[in-house]
Amino acid sequence: ENQDDEYFGEYSGLKIHLEMLSDHARTSTYARAVNSLRSQIEGKIVLDVGCGSGILSIFCARLGAKHVYGVDASDLLHK
Image 1 (cartoon, rainbow, N blue to C red):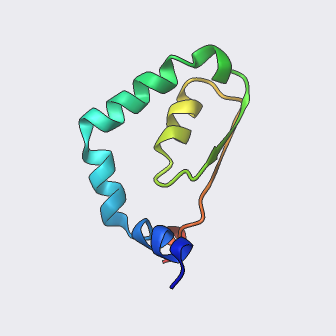
Image 2 (image 1 turned 180 degrees about the vertical axis):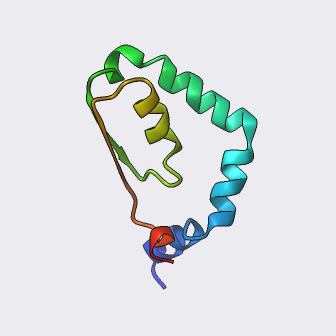
């Protein structure tokens, strides 16, 4: 198993994403950070590379991004 497989393997299950989303301090800090960029996001096309659960993509969409594309290399969606 190479280093990439090991890294992405850690994020291929729902449990880690649920744990991160349940971490209120983490999620609310991300929300505040994204909200502080409203003028750079509103009406723009956003590419969220390594989107994981997609929470940052959702925050951007809520701020009025024209389009949001979330891409991730983990196998989470293939299970």
